[in-house]
Length: 312
Length: 277
Image (cartoon, rainbow over all chains, first blue to last red):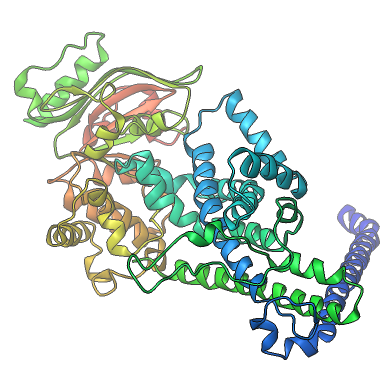
């Protein structure tokens, strides 16, 4: 009797609550979808605008093989894309081992004291430093201090510095995500710290580390400001010496000391010209730059997929 | 003979004197814990435990949650040393050398003493590499030796027939019970002096549990096993000796049959008759 009264009293109320919750869900979903549509259409507008604007040049093979020129229709991006690839090689070659190493050290080896805390806070803060500041640092330190000149090496170094915090933080997070179980299993077998890290923790964390690395490299590939600051050329009519050669030792590093330009600088240069024809070149360069980023992400996805499957 | 010794041991253990046993007794012992205390920071988790571990027998540690049985087990391969703020006093002597493993290098201790954890924790590698892991850590390169030892360990863990055709596949493709037996094989492959099992069946279903118990019974004459279990029937089924712990103290230690049929202490009696715990 009492039960029946109670359920009668509370039932309409419950229905009200359920209805209200459902309404809130619908409203939130609606807001979410509209935000998504706005964001995606803005992005799509940019991409489509670039593709349409750059189409005549994108379809011309000379565009990829020619050096920059005063004549917009003869101008190409060969020095820019070669420069970007070489600079990214240097950046990745420096930032990945340093960043992963620092992340492993901070997460696995560093003693928990105020020095470590201080380093951690600074690493996180470095991620937020404007890129032009890194450019100034490189100008003062690498160029005037070490005398490295306006070279591919200097550009690679400054971009490596720029993305180092991203790689360190993502390495740490990936390592922290490895369950304690797995470490105890390794330690339980008598593994020392380095064996545990090298054989079990890093392989399990590598897909997270890879993601962070790609996010960092994708940021670096689009940076113009720090590279302009160190004095990269905007007009260059030759390529750096090839890293590969026909005679032993088949590989050389002269290209590291070569002047260069990169895609974002080339693009910036063309956008700032008054002639509309150069703007077409800039749009086409933008499309290629995005494709390069996309290709890098593609490689990362492929690597991640294969690393996950390949387990010996 | 051993039973007799252990009965005596049990009696002396209740009295405060803890002299090392005469040489004749050592040969039947794999290890002896003497006045072992342990602190997690300020909290004392083990209070002057004295206990003998019989050579090539199964010793079970039972007791209610928080009684320190896992803490005691983990002291054996110095797992506590991985975390800051933990402290031991007393001795765990390994025979025949009579080394106090509390004073040995923890990595050295873990090379000699294998451990299996509550939840199956295989490495994200192939079945073969999981079992070979301990040997690889010890620097074994010889392929023949590796594959022989892996096969032997998998046979010991009663897993060989199920996995022999897919040794190169991921260990994550195995069922929970198979994964736990894989972890046992991994611990057995380096042929440890003592095998520690920390509630090895608590995450498994009854059928998988039975398989693990069977394999423990099969290896009991070749390995010294210490098992922590919250399941008294399990302790009764598979162990030769049982230690009952309560609030960090060892309350009673006796041959399993005796402890379950004629417990001497009220606490033990209450626990095994299900009055608490």
